[in-house]
Length: 219
Image 1 (spheres, rainbow, N blue to C red):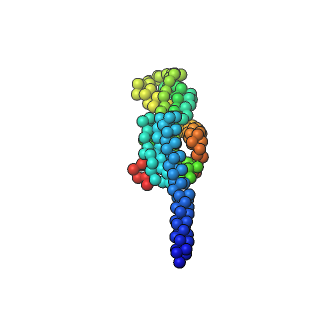
Image 2 (image 1 turned 90 degrees about the horizontal axis):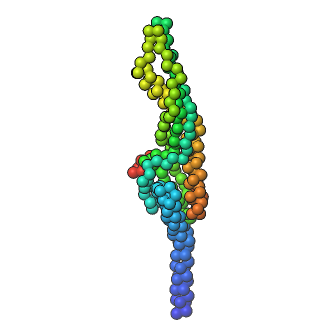
Image 3 (image 1 turned 135 degrees about the horizontal axis):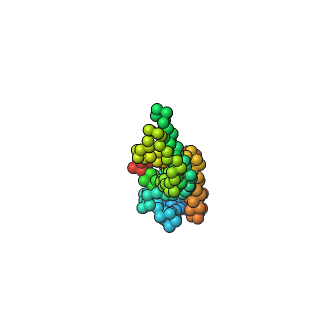
């Protein structure tokens, strides 16, 4: 009887230990690996980019987003842009033509949400970047190519100011239609892949996924 009780107790103890080991192996260890990977990622982002994305381990927040830098510039491009105005009144034509070099800097506004989720196991990092944007547009080397009054249709300061504003709009439209924003995102993804690879994670960018623009609304 005593022997049976001892065997039963030993079997129960073995089952309890086995259950604990299985729980640790299947539940606790994978989550701990995700948390450890998130901690290493936070340190690497801070070291390289001086910022911390919102980092979650299996969708539980372990680091809030902290971005002392408000913008992350990942692409820059220059273009020569020209604009011409011909305006005729009573058969009298005035002409104003200008050109300037514009430098556009593109990347990410870090007031928007930038988040990373690390599933259990800590082997992958699911990245949700905000949308790439043109962050700044600087004009230089403005040249007046033609500045001609009509016989009685004269150019005014207002005409010239309007033409310069139109030149700026043309430049922004030109950069927006180019691959500048795609290039900015591609460069950011390459940088992030290097960071995640350094801590043993594979970066995954779900197709067409953007970070939640309102961090307070995130789960």
